[in-house]
Image 1 (cartoon, helix red, strand yellow):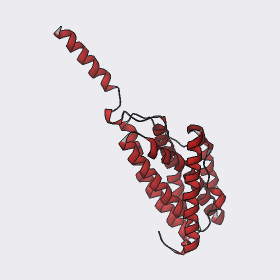
Image 2 (cartoon, rainbow, N blue to C red):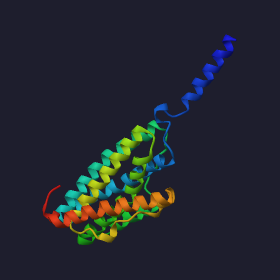
Image 3 (cartoon, rainbow, N blue to C red):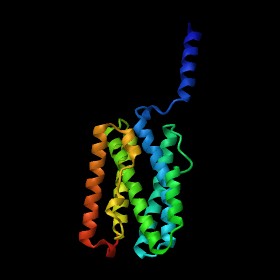
Image 4 (tube, rainbow, N blue to C red):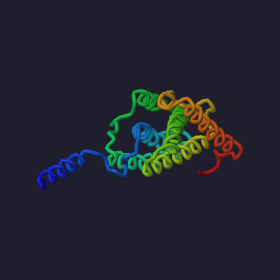
Length: 216
């Protein structure tokens, strides 16, 4: 009897080695999707920011590029650490669409480079905002909630910085359809409204304050 109980205990321990930390047992498909999406964003937006820091024709765009690249370095380290703990496999390269955006930005020069960098980056940040907000509101895991809040804060900061260049187009803020496919109908509307309200508010504030001449 004792040997049988020991065998059961050993089997449970072995099985436990292959499962995520029990502290992260409540993550769901949306939580995992956010980790993947943030990682992919960092993979292309970080290098794009470094390019802007070095190549932009406008001083403000260079400053914004540096700030965004620094933030993505930190965010990438956070997402990789959390994904490792919850056993979520992260991609090693951005999506095909993101690569095409990066190539488009790289091929541009002078004012065209500045405009493409600012507006492609702003659109990409808007697409992540809805998912991060949904995870922040719905996740049952404390670590994921904290990370989602960091993602929301980072996206808002970045959109405000990009708008402070004075060359952000109001049409560049969008929610990519992939977010809508992941969420239910009510959540789609919720996410779109969040992005529209947040983006419109920051864009309006920048215009009122004359942000191109101000430092973040």
